[in-house]
Length: 233
Image (cartoon, rainbow, N blue to C red):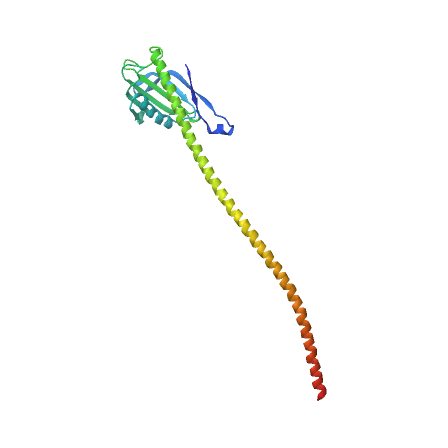
């Protein structure tokens, strides 16, 4: 059974500076569904969720094989009636699919192709089975591309947030730089004020010395006058 290349860009891969490549394994088994137990293609899809796989499958079948997909929630079954798969059958093909979450292992997808007379199997319809393998291969590539798009959106949002943070930091730096200049100017003015105050204090001391001498001289004049008045009595 062939291996389908299924390339997913994982978040943890960025930590090691590389892309992670995962192989999605395709195998053939008899599986049960609401229409009975029939031969089916089983695909293991690492790092995928069932909901995501189902959504992409519906779009994929509708776009490529004109099959309108209905989801039967009760049976967890995607039903594509009258899909047109020219290389598989001249008549329309009913395609059934289920997707199950497998936890950390990812998801498992099971696909049945009802050719009308029988369900597709490699033993009975080897050529048509090759077409089915190609369909699954094409789908896994589409799935991989969509998942990469999702990851790209996440990374772009992260980049946008980082750029916003960077702008905030630049804005903060600009404000801090202005604050520093203002503080320097304030310090300069305060230093000038301190220098002026020191000069004023020095001058005040000089003025006090001069004034003290004047007070002392005047005190002596007053005392001398008092003595003369006292002596004249």
